[in-house]
Image (cartoon, rainbow, N blue to C red; front, side, top):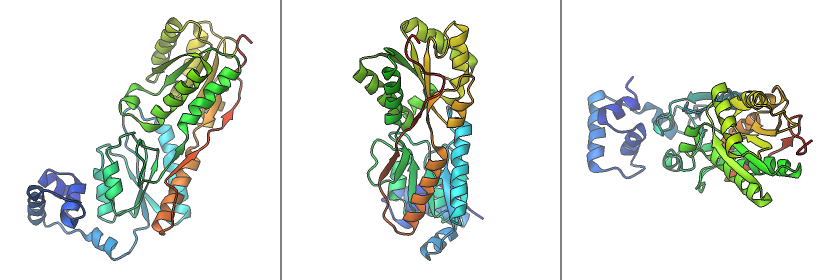
Length: 335
């Protein structure tokens, strides 16, 4: 069977452009429309799935867009996927996983052809290139993440700005006066990924509010990267006594690197993290943390999407409040 992607490839456009050219839902230049129509004729394409959508029938399938990009931490992505699948099955829906990072092509393909009734979108960027399609697409969507301009969208996420502030507030209350954020890999910030940028905003705002010396360093993964960032922090911020980690794979390597350089945790340095609770609890020193509630976020996203499919009103943006769990890795300064 000829697919919309085949037509798009022949015409030299994206699948969503093919859909718009055939449906007239968005303005398309005459030259582009003629190329699309020629490709349709040459390939004998028939938009059978669209007929199902127009007839009002449902596929009972939800699409989950999880682009596997550099800097993505696969175990957390897996938690999101499992939670979405579990919640969808409880509502008699299956889940179609979209892992390509090519922008809106996969989303356009499954929604415009009726393969999925709606889509849940992850790894949201502040200026996400998928937003124009999501706003114009007839199929409903829910974002796990909040872009810079969320008007006309349905979003759910942990309040990462508040999470960054909460970690710094806890450390400041313990008397720490110099604090650093060891953040996500550099490519995550280059993409302007919303959750990472917002956590930096919260960390910086709280450090400034408390009058703390502070530093923010992105970091890759692995022991060598952890050792390098620790050495740089101790060189650039010699008064450092507290660290916030927003990079799940680095929790244990950072603790090990600080200890190898003679800093006891929490005796000489307090450490907090924003990460899944099991990661924090299982660290070589159990880490005070704000949990990333992947299971709750996935379930909330499915709930919102199913309500939208039923025609019910839903809130525009839902932010889950962060909760700090104190463990053995934080103590008063000089304790």
